[in-house]
Structure formats: structure tokens, C-alpha cells
Length: 291
Image (tube, rainbow, N blue to C red):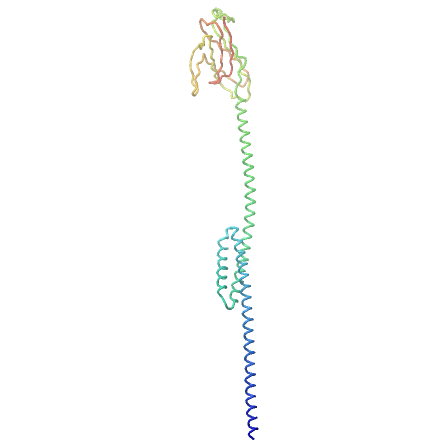
């Protein structure tokens, strides 16, 4: 009887121990399962965090490249990049759910697409404007060259016209004459017989010269280097000219002969020099001798 009772107690103890063992095993299994779930969730969280961080880094690199191009949108791009950098710092400190970071990442990515599209469009416009500006600059340079060439041509033409409009004095002659009582003049080479010195020259035809009255200054110098005649002096700027007489010629663009007499007494023997001036410019000269 006692043996049966002992066996019954033993069985009860075994059953209790078995139940405790099964409970422990169940608890251990649950803990292991929970730990695995936690590890899986943690691993997933870390993977998602790394993915979000990688996307943020790529987003920052895109902004950095766009900012380096130094467009007029640089300020807006910098502000958006700073938002990305700030989110990266928050993500580094985070140990929990990254879903909110994904949401903010998506928003930043959408903003980036809009800004980059605007920036690209702005760059295209700048390229177009640069091309147009360069084309305009080329046109302006070519126009400037053409204007300079035309100015040079006009200057050369003006100089040519100015040179061409200068009257040419030809056939300048000087001689001494004896004046008879009848007024007739007879050329002579003897100084003691000379009553007048005659100076003559021809003004050539010139169609582009300005017509009107022309004044020429005639200078006759004897063998003793004296100016014969009026011996008047005229100033032309810093220059001065002592002349024998002036002659006024009505020029009408056609060839015209000019002749003037210079009266005198006791003309010296030797060589006489005749110079014809247009103002202070010597335009013709000749010489003759008396014996």
C-alpha cells in the first residue's frame, strides 16, 4: 500500500517536472523567436538606414555638382543641399524607425528634380545667350573693322582730293625789259638798260580745285641777295615771308596765264631768283641773269 502511494507521488513529481521542462522549453523557444525577430527587424532597420543615407549622399553630390556650375540658381540649390546635410546628421543620430526619413528623402528628391530641371534649362538659355552674344560680338568686330577700313579709305580719299585740289603752277619765267617811250617793252639781258622785271607763270586746269580769287606772293631776289620790289613781310603762323609783290588771280578751274611787271632802277648784274608762293608754300621757282 505504501509502495503504491510512493509510486503515485513519484509519478506526480515526474509529471510536474515534465510540465516545467516543457514550459521552459516553450519559453526558451519564444525568447529565441522574439530575439530573432528583433535581430531581423534591427538588421532591416540598419539596411534601410544605410539605403536612405546612400540616397542622401547621392542627393548631396548632385547638388554639389550643380552648385559648382555657379548659375543664378546657386543660392536656391545651396539651401536645398543644406536641408539634405541636416537630414543626414539627424539620420546618423537615429536608432529607430527610418520611415520618416524616407518620407523626407522622397520630398527632397522631388524638390531636387524640379530645381535641377530649372537649372539645366537655365544653362541651356545661358548657352544660347552666350552664342548670340558671341555672334553679336563677331558682327560688331567685323562692323568695327569695316568702319575703320571705310574711315581709312575716306581719309585717304580726302587726302587724295586735298592733294588733287592743289593748283599747279607751271612755266614760271623771269626776264628784264627796256620800256620805250611808246610803251613797247623789249627784252634785254643788260642790267643798265632794264626798266622792269617781268615775272610770268601758268596755273594749270584743275576741275576739283575750289574756284575763286587766288593770291600768290612773288619773291624776286637779286645777285646781292636783296629782295627786289615792295619788300613787304607777311606772317603765316610761326613763319614769315618777305616778298616783292602779290598778284590776285581769278581762277575758274581752267588754265590761266599770269604776268606781272616789277618796276625798278639800276638793277644789279648777276643771277636773279624768282620764287612763287601760295601763302607760305613754295609752288614754283626759276632764275635768270643780267649782265
